[in-house]
Length: 198
Image (cartoon, rainbow, N blue to C red; front, top):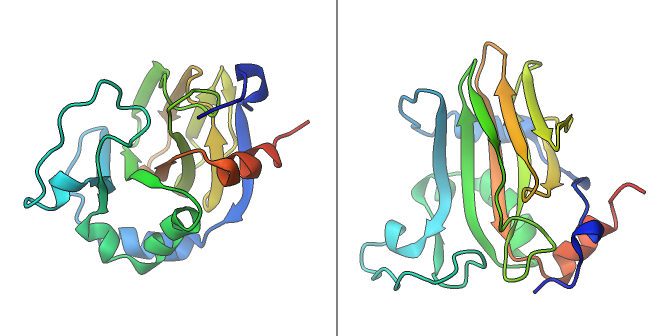
């Protein structure tokens, strides 16, 4: 549960965590993504019933935001990726990690401006999302509130995604980010708030 106002929730924070880009790239290169047109999602951790057919799907929740309505399991691609698992465990050792995905954006593709109404530290009964770029190019621009967030490969960022954001990939190669959703407990809040800009 949040006890922050929106004004206290920073718009973007580069966290003091850096991950080995070469190791992440090596592992994602072994994942069979298949073909895609402009935007693609590879779940690495998702609803338990989608990973294990023996688990019955839970009843549809009234509120998806906090992630407690279902169990979550690692998918086979994550289980076969020891370093990506280590990255996820950086957070799983401290809080409940829910959805983990690789997000791919094709060359020349655009994600139109939108907001995610539950992905903010100030939202009660919510999760927050951390973003770790893995593959990028000079033509990739992530805009939050109309300003470019200068995320570099291996860095870890908190973004207040309840605010308007959009992505352009004007480069000649695809962009791949790792996104990790988690419950914002005291450890997560302290990590974010201790590193926000003045």
